[in-house]
Amino acid sequence: MKRTRPTATLPPVRRPPTDGVAVLGTGRLGGAIAEALLAAGHPTCVWNRTADRTGPQADAGARVADSPAEAAAGAALLVLCVGDFQAVRQTLSAAGANLVGRTVLVMTTLTPDEARAAAAVAAEHGASYASVPFMAGYQAIGRPESLLLCAGPREVFDRHQETLRALGGDVRHVGDDPGLGALFEAAVVGFLLEFWAGYLHTLALVRRESGPTDAFASVLQSTLQGLAPLLPVIAGQTVSGDYDPDTFGRLDYLAPMADAMIGLRRSRGIDTARLEHLKGLIDQRLGLGFGGEGLASLIEVIEGSGDGGAGPVG
Ligand SMILES: NC(=O)c1ccc[n+]([C@@H]2O[C@H](COP(=O)([O-])OP(=O)(O)OC[C@H]3O[C@@H](n4cnc5c(N)ncnc54)[C@H](OP(=O)(O)O)[C@@H]3O)[C@@H](O)[C@H]2O)c1
Image (cartoon, rainbow, N blue to C red; front, side, top):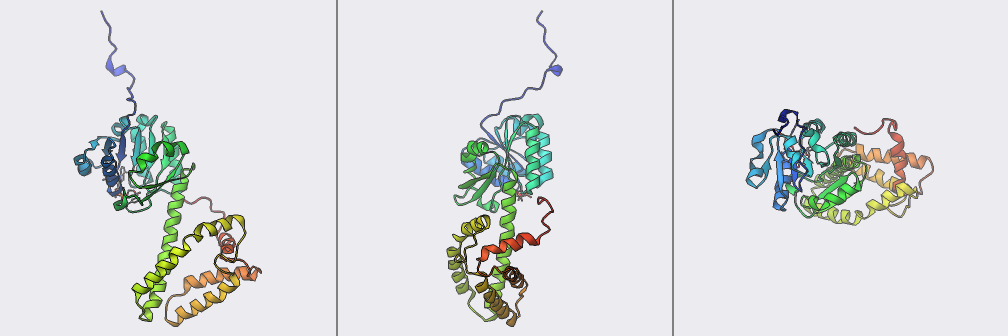
């Protein structure tokens, strides 16, 4: 008589990954991502903690999984768009053994340390990992000008960049360290906060004089276009230590310029705190005898003014 093993004792069967993509978390970002993948012709499975929020993606042709493990079972590539780091960790743990051999791309906003920790969790489960911050709002998913950063092993980027192009036309590998994407994302946000604060202060000055803000905005727009190419130049100077004064002027020319701007704003009742802080940095360099250097030399006081020993962000 032919003997059969009882099914209860059979080892779990792991289905090999298909070419499909699974999107875990169909909130605003994940929903838009799943729909863009479907529109680009990728067989797409979705899972969401609250199951009835997958309706629009199901209507667009997505297969709906009941659990992260089921989603991972049929997909070579998993894209996580859940709310935060805890949610990423829980979702990866729930996918468990079905992560073996898969690639996990996390689009959740994380700190650099969280991104590295998420990569470690993925590795424990036998999966490759990259962090993929999307550098715009979810409405911009799928546009040719939209920028995605990919931080993780180069081969992960090479293998999946075509798929990522369905989400944004400008996909860039920023390095093998999975924390780099989060670092760049946080750095851009910090820059933009200061940028908009500066813009509002200058708008306030124009408005105090009843100047036409639309004409001013247009002038500033043209000015900024000319300045954008200087970003890599200044970055290079902070690395080389060669603070060329021709890039944006010598510090001993910029100091009286800053004083004049502070005086003008103050005379019109506009806050001067941020400009005074900048003037303080310039003065420190002047006090050390570096008035002939360019603006980039302020990096030395900026880097010297923090606690310097707090360790990595996050
Ligand atoms: N929205 C954007 O434009 C944008 C752009 C760039 C980056 N991001 C980042 O993308 C991430 C998602 O943003 P979002 O705007 O899509 O948020 P959202 O619309 O609030 O959606 C959050 C998603 O995370 C899920 N979730 C939350 N906690 C969870 C948990 N513990 N376990 C499993 N799933 C969980 C939610 O499931 P439920 O439906 O069950 O609550 C939902 O699918 C955030 O980290 C955000 O910073 C968003």
